[in-house]
Structures are given as C-alpha cells and as structure tokens.
Amino acid sequence: MKTGRKIMKFQKQFKKIALLTGIYAIFAAIISFSIIAFIDNSTTTGTDEISNTSNTSVSNNKMVQNSINSNSQSQDTKYIIENKLTNIPYGAINISFSYDGKYCAYLYRNEIYIKDISSDTLINKISDNATVAAFRLISDRDIIIYFTLKGTSLNVKSYDIANNMETLQKTINIPAGATIKHIDYSALTNLIFFNIESGDSSKLANTLYYLNIMKRVKTINLKNAINNMVLLNNTFTLYYEDSNNNLFCYPQPIVDFNKQKVQLLGCDSGDNVFIESLDNKNTIYIVKNEKIDKTINLNDHAYIEIYTNKIGVYVVYSNYIINLAGDINKKMLLDKNLKFIGIGGPKIYFRDSISNIISRDNPI
Image (cartoon, rainbow, N blue to C red; front, side, top):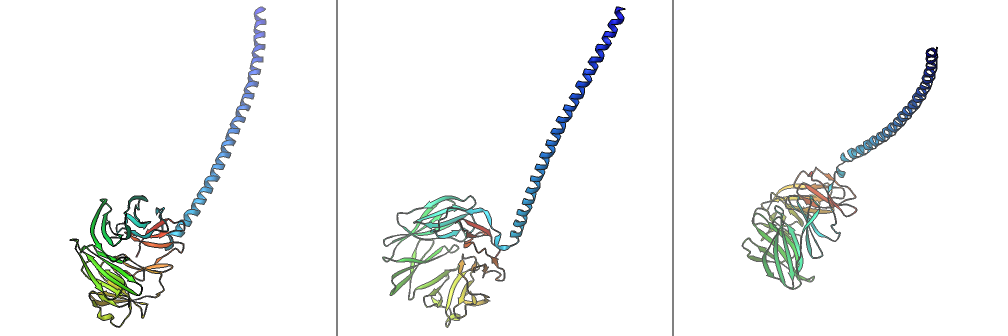
C-alpha cells in the first residue's frame, strides 16, 4: 500500500513539474521569438537606411561623373588641377617654364625664384647684392641666363638648375642709367645677344652686345632704336625691327620689305621667322633665308598678345590660341576665367582666380 501511495504521489509531482516546464518553455519561446523579431526588424531597418544612403551616393556620384564627362568634352575645361603651382605672387615678373616641363622661374623683389613643377616646391632662390635686371630660361636646356646691374657694371651670369651651379660669364661697363631692352640667345651657337638702351626720350642710343662661348664680347652700334629682335636657333643670324618698323637681317634691310611697315613676331624651332604686316594686319609672312617663303591670313587680327618661345609662335585671343608654326585652323579654346601665362614642355599654363597657376595639355 505504501508503495502504491508513493507511486501516485510521484505521478502527481511529475505532472506538476511537466506542466510548469511546459509553461516555462512557452514563455521562453515567446520571449526568444520577440527578441529575434526585434533584431530582425532592426537589421532590416538599418539595411534600408544604408541602402538609401548608398543609392543617394551612387546617384550623386553619377551626377558628378556626368558633370565631369560633360566638362571633359569641352576643350576649355581640361585643366590638370593636381599640377597647380601655388604662392606665386601677382607681382612676379617674367614667369617662365622650362622646355622639359620640370621648372618654373620668375623674378620677384630682386630675386629669381625656381620651383619644381611636379611637387610645387621652391628648390632655389637666386639673390644678388646688385639689381637683378633681367633673366631668360634657355629654350632647350635647364639653364638660366641673368643680368645683374650695379652702377655702370653689368654682370652676365648663368645658372644651371639641375647642377645648382652659378657661373659669371662676363662683366661689362655700360652707360649710366642704361637699361636692358631685349635679350636673345642661340643654344646651338652658344651666343647671347642683348640690347642696351641709353640716353633720354629725346635721344636714345641702342647698342647690341653679343657674347660668345669664349666669353668674348663684341658690340654693334645701331642708328635707330630696336623694337624687337630675334636670333635664330641654328645659325649666326640676327633679325631685328627698328623703331620705324623696318625689318633687317643684320646688317642689311630685307629687300622684300623695303616699302612695308612690319612687326617682327618671333621664330620657331626650324628658324622660320614670322612677320606681321602693319599695312594689312591679317597678313603674316613666314621668312626663310631672308626671303618670304609663305603667307598666312588671319581671320581675326584683334589678338591680345603674341607669345613666342623659339619653338612656336602663339597668337593669344580672348577665347582661344593658335600656333602660327603649326596648323592655324587648330584652336585651343580658353576658359574666360583663366589668364594665359606661358608654355613649357607639353603644357600650357594659366593663372586662376585665386592666384594658383594650373596647366593643361598643349594640343597645338
């Protein structure tokens, strides 16, 4: 009997335990399901937000890319901002770029600054206790020719950028108050020509000096002042335009222009000389060996400036540039918000509205 009662009591306790266990299991399941549902819902909501953000970003990226593509199709917006040059003051004079596109040089407050273009860093600064009167970057090598003036003593110096080497070429005595008006050179013949102007406005005297590789100096006294001069790249030949707009190939006037007033523009790498007629400003003559070889007719003579680097002769208009030494029908369109500065290597350089100098490929 006692055994039977024990069994019945055990069965009742087992049922009670089983019932409680079932209830606890149900509650646990409900709680677990709720937590899982909450987490799932939170995850879904988060994914939707990320998806929306991603879609917005993709949409914005597409808009930006479309804008870039649209700009890239316009010639006047293909500028390479990553190669910009900064901190070149507006007061800088003769901003120049080397033939290989490596260096930029300019004169500011009596010092010549030299910057590395690729890194936008100042690599040297040429200072002198005399006045730095002028300088030129040679068109086919990384060498600067510069002139310092103290009283009547003019020093002709050169500076090799890559080797950081300065050389005094010659010291010349010039008249008091004289100025350097023009400089030109031939890297092949190693000649430097410079025109010294002295006197006052009522009586100006122009003297041509030329310095050779042996550091010997010779002078040429001229009857009239010089408006412009061009020393050819490959031969000892000097063209110049006098103050009466007559054209000479030293020492004689050019026969083909005896009765014409002209403006000497420059020469290209092939020693073609470019002359503008002042009687008909749409006409450009190309002179070779002292003779008119070709004629170019400009559609528009209202240009802003002529830029020459002994490689090409560029006519700069308000909204485009052409190269007289190339295909004149091929125009490089300009951005009206940029100011043309110069050419070096494969790039053309402009100053933007916040004083940076930026570049673009030279297609002409």
